[in-house]
Length: 193
Image 1 (cartoon, rainbow, N blue to C red):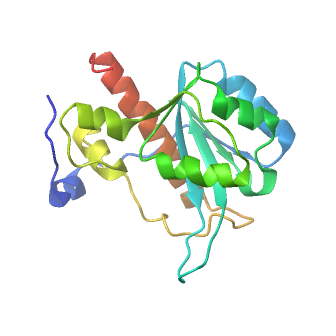
Image 2: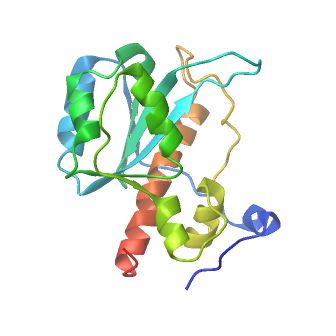
């Protein structure tokens, strides 16, 4: 079984995990259509979003990116520019395609401000962790507990609306969605799902 918690000091000592597959930056509707066609063939995909941080009370930024990942490919969708067209809306509502994330309730709430949709097929790994008796949830904790690794949060407060996303930003964004596929795969292989 898994420990219910992991000390921050222990997380810091774990090996760094980062996505090393192919990153596809989706800037156009044609690229989005192609990405969705590929992702619909997968049994499940990792899911996350990024939003430009606000530093002043009352400021608001809409979701800048949606990240969708398989074990080998990550698709970084510039949703702030593209919006949620019918292709993406149908993908987000598809109950048969599992979309696995961590702490996704707020992500979905924010995305629905861009365009209302009925989320379908979403699985929050925090909920699965809670069923397994884990009380310390979130990306860093679950990566430590389930994968005996850690993820960097160094890019978390960077500008996700920037015209030119850095290699560090792209790797960070891809890793957040990819980690969800790694955790889900491990839980599935060990019979916890």
